Every structure is written in structure tokens, then in C-alpha cells.
View 1 (cartoon, rainbow, N blue to C red):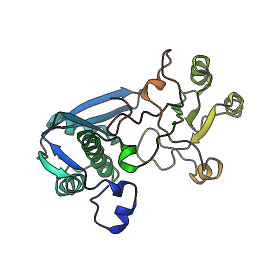
View 2 (cartoon, one colour):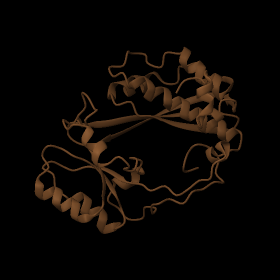
View 3 (cartoon, rainbow, N blue to C red):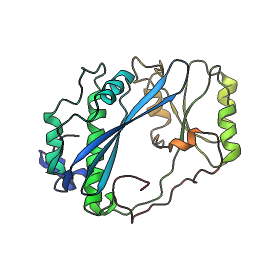
View 4 (cartoon, rainbow, N blue to C red):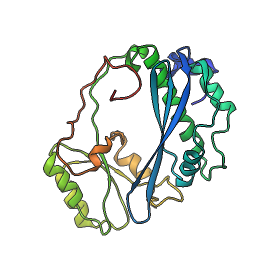
Length: 258
């Protein structure tokens, strides 16, 4: 995101929010990590903006692990305290260097900026006692989730079948790889639970890179659901909430859980 500098910006849904008042007193960073394979450890950073007795949360999903290590080691060094509108806070972020070391990937900058912007949105809504739906004058509706999953190597359907045994209504977004066999594809299709296939063709210099033409995804899955499954659904365990999730219009902020 950037500051709301044009008429077109203000005609979007997000453009209805620039004048929300925002008070930032401090912020903190929480580092998260999860090993997905012997080659890949996923790191992220939770940004917590605090002010006026409320806290807003955003998630930095920058892909390069070193970017998170540098950020977390430095701590909360940015001069963000002050009184703003949401628009002026976004402008303040544009003035600051969010990386102590130049990031290797071009998409790292918008990922990090959105972590602070989404935390600011969450905080501004909470300070005003608003939900995102009420601020946009929209009615919440149920959200259908898919489980985002990459099969082990050599690939089998066991991880999919284990989850379906616990939750027969689950749907999946699966990362396809060149090692998939025709029999595996047939077995996965037979479950009726695969909502979409992710070919990872736009990724570069990452362990999840794919070599499949991304146009195939647009041909076969133009209306597939978003990859927004809750983290808990990556675990094979009982007791998870059902999906679709019922909306909760009474809660304020930009998060599902309080």
C-alpha cells in the first residue's frame, strides 16, 4: 500500500479508511519459525503496534530468512510514535527505511510495509471501536478455507487422507511438483477434496520454486479459493474449528480472533 494520494485510491474500499485516527505509542516484534523440510525453514515476524490501550497486529511474510533475523535482532528501532491518520501513518512509513540491509528480493519491501500497514489498520479500527466490515459498510459472510499443503518426497496422498479422516469436509490447495505420478494424481482426484493446484511458477530462488507454466493454473483454476487456511489446519489433530467460519461482526479490528 501507499498513502491515499489520488482520487482513484479513495474510490477503492481501502480508500474509505484514510481519515481513521491512529495513536502509536510503541511497537514490538515477535519472531516465528517453522521447519517445513530439511532444506526450508519458514520465518515470519509479527508486528505489534500499541497505543491508547489497544494493540494492532500485522504479519511480515518476507520470504528471505535473513531479512527476519536482521529485523528481529535490531528490535523496535523505527521512530513511529505519534498521532496520525491512517493515511499520514502510511506516508510516514514511506519516509523510513524498513530494512537495515538491502533485501535480496524485490517483493520483500511491500511484504514488510504491509506488515506495519495492516497492524496500523488493526490498531486504528480498535481505537475507534470499529470492525473492518462496519468501517466499509459491508455485511460479513462465511469464509471457506482450504488447507495449503505440499506433499512429502516421494509424494503420497497419506497426509491428505489423514486430515480427511478427521475432517471429511476439508478442501485442499496442493503444491504440485514434477515428482507427482499419474496414479497419485488419480488418487487425489478421487477424494474430491482438492480445490486447486499451486504450480509455484512465479517463485524464484526458493525451495518451493516450480517449473510449470503458470498459465495452466489460470486455465484450470480461475475461480479457486484463496490460500488462507488457519495455521492449525497444518497439524493432523482433532478439535479444530469447522469451516466455513461464521462471521463475527461485533468484534473490532482487522483480525479474526480477539
